[in-house]
Length: 285
Picture 1 (cartoon, rainbow, N blue to C red):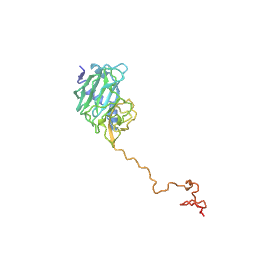
Picture 2 (picture 1 turned 60 degrees about the horizontal axis):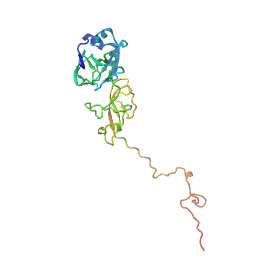
Picture 3 (picture 1 turned 60 degrees about the vertical axis):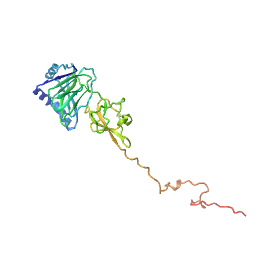
Picture 4 (picture 1 turned 90 degrees about the vertical axis):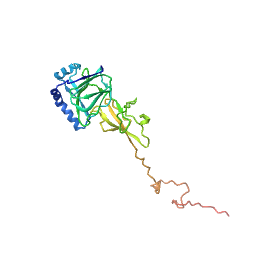
């Protein structure tokens, strides 16, 4: 099988101890106070947790002494987990319940219930839908079968409608070294002039340490730091009119008469500049 479901991995008392852990609560309050969608952190792994994880084939590597965890509110968009090391399975264990939310793995729906765990093969797309956008939920993971953290590969995922249509696939350009400009957007999604692309609204970011936060508008052609995953959609605007150059009508072109150039013999008698040129004509007799 590609997907495994585990129930009642921890007792109710163990779930409460994990949720009320000092470190766990610190990151929850920090996320609430700073209005973060996601807070990733680790806690020291005790022998009691290790023994529980081993029952479900999560065999921690010897150098791993911290357990990856996450507080999150709202949906996690469809993605495939990646990691810096090879792995075969992703593991998620819910410490709290989201009554209406669903975990979708490879098109199959699963409930989000405290004490439930899910294990699925590397390479399977997954997401959450219908989750509470105002309430933080807690989970262990996502981690590999060896205990190290896995997750969405750093990238920029473009939702090309505004407001965004989350039922459509994400657009990822071939060049992901910067936030793209309008010339790289598929023609059917470009808003016609006089509108222009102001920038990319950050709808979701996978790490609170990322330089751009939810609500930021990142200008086109901004270099992308490939350590974080962003979900963005376009902001179009009508650019302000270009200011007209100042006019000189009704004013002297020159501010200093000493800079005025007169053609030779164009001065009035006496060497004083005049309005009309004076020319002496010889009379024919």
